[in-house]
Length: 336
Image 1 (cartoon, rainbow, N blue to C red):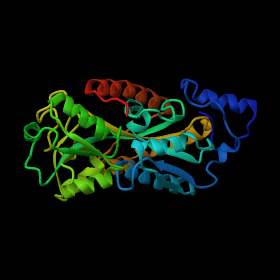
Image 2 (image 1 turned 180 degrees about the horizontal axis):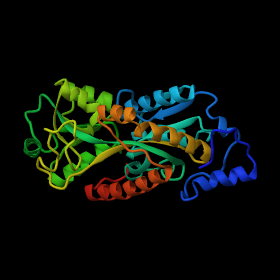
Image 3 (image 1 turned 120 degrees about the vertical axis):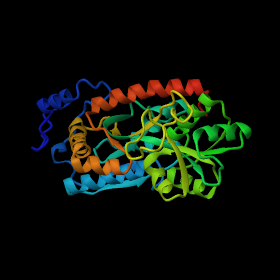
Image 4 (image 1 turned 60 degrees about the vertical axis):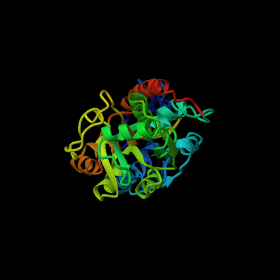
């Protein structure tokens, strides 16, 4: 990739070299911008599509703090909650591609929302382009302490005895909690009612208070409340048990054979952002998530570090679009 340690001069050769660095990625921008070698020269905005306190916000602040220390410029987290992440995604998609506005995205903002929302005002694969996958996390199936169930099998039986009466909370339409629970419903035949929120934090507040009955939400947001005894965790959503919670069964082990779902979190940029800046930011985040300190901090939060190149992220997102499109069809989810 281009040496970004020297000042960048926008001549023809530099433009061609910058484009070649990401030549295998057809959807990434080809237009380099002036002075990218000195980037950042001012504060950088990380837009989070959910309320403060949720998994996306937690991971965004961890990465932003690390980048602020590395570059000596503030990486500021700005929460723009609502519409399942679409408010934030549209904002970033329409922002100046100058390298000072990014989104900390999720499966919803990059892959799922097209199957859930009508009339998106941004194209999920063209208007926001990849930088890096930060981490993957399992979802935690948790219930309010007032619900008389202590296992997935008991939850299924209880839900079937009260069709449509149980309320499941999610951080919003199109979130992994939403599609993960719809997958659970379709595989078990239970009927439950969806209650979307503007982030994990307000949803978990209501779960603790018993205003909703369950969630299958991201582990980093849910785990502290489960450890405190404020909610009851009964399973993880991944194919294998989570190493830090070895006694907690998977959904498949606990009564839903074949069930598997996970969330992932990324950094992405407005289309036409300079490939030089994308490569520079990618290298910094990749270095952090693969470092001993970064790996330990992410795993302590309940996240599995990923990293890799922008091309790796694009391939991964393409696979997730295919997967969740099939889940949406299987579960009968239609755009609203």
